[in-house]
Length: 340
Image (cartoon, rainbow, N blue to C red):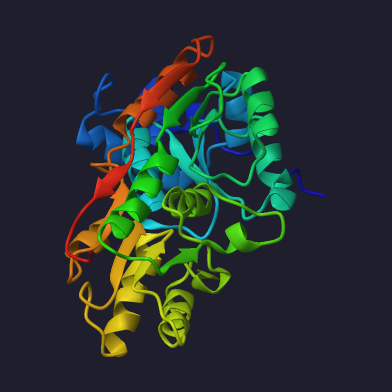
């Protein structure tokens, strides 16, 4: 029986290419352009030998030797949205410069969080950013931080102990949005919710802010004006149509996402209504799409979709795990535009 063929190593590649093993490592990691410059000719020669020998990096062995995986993770509640997509894109751009890759862990509900928690708990990644409204219990997040995993978490309540917390002030910004509508004379204000907010036992910062703003102005909550639909475009459009067909339709809609709000605008237009004259609409997210539609969407969100501070905090915590917990402020605010 023939002996199994030995897998080529980085040393084999280095000898064939006539370079050092360190140079091969720099080329394969993608980090050769800054502190370890490698000429384009050398890079091409190394990659040619890699292809010739069929060399593949043994990431498991490499991680064990170096006690790191060169992976970072973004945990978010699906479906994806432009806010999360921008966070992932900016983290990816920053990670490439450091020889890291980015993986994502969508967690739809707390009863489905086990797989993502295992990835984090067993250190398949070197650190993670947890996006707002995660389907992971705060107790589990604190346990991950206590176990030494570098974490940056978007949360307005979680204590910044052994992790960094980005404060968005979502609740006050969303209350301001609903109050903005009330101050302009609206009393029948619909809420287009995330699906999980209306599930049994579910709640959410945005829905709670909507209810609180109504209560502060002595406006009773009408359950007929609270519908799901913020997560998906077709559902948002269909639910907005149903709202507008009611015998007493809303004069305004507050939507838990810009994505849903934009489709509420389309539903109103297709029903022969004008925005904002017949229906005022406010979204959440302050996305580029909301700014470019007509009429431009009034929304709630950060003034700039810039995650530099949070991303830098993650790299700092990966480099120095014993850093004390820190609070980073990126408060959301009402962004008035033409849809109100």
